[in-house]
Length: 206
Image 1 (spheres, rainbow, N blue to C red):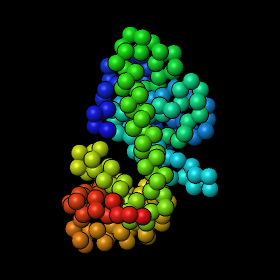
Image 2 (image 1 turned 120 degrees about the horizontal axis):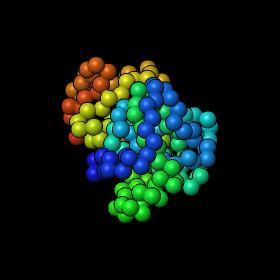
Image 3 (image 1 turned 90 degrees about the vertical axis):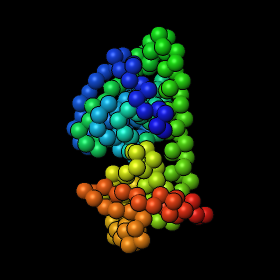
Image 4 (image 1 turned 180 degrees about the vertical axis):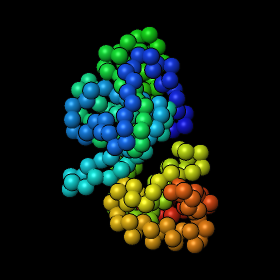
């Protein structure tokens, strides 16, 4: 993922800039695509609604990344996206994207690589849904850890929504990991002290 960060910066002049408030819905799963987006500042939470009606956070987009890439050419969005905090985003319509690709052919590869990364993320989450909560939690924290330079910024409420579990269950696992010194909590952030131990939990067979 790190190799994709800020690669789209040279093309922001072709997009429409928006400032959005916390919890602002950017697009909804299933609705006809309007184009794709770039996060310049803030945080975007990506959620997936299951066939049973359960909504889960499957990704937190950091600044410097595209999102909603699947909503091009009026294809339905596969997920929903909302601002996790006040954010600055850029919108790129199909027409704007075509102009970028014509003038900057390298942009098409950046877009394609980002789209592939998102499909892999969704596939990973779906494959883990039947695994124990502790294993799912370890997998997600590791993902945040590697994408955010060694820390995972996530509170227990968001973790519970992501995993489809109760806050009591999440807190029990967090306290267990704290006692074993796998993690440290500070200012609502979870810092991983022993990535190898968390990785071992994440890679257990379901």
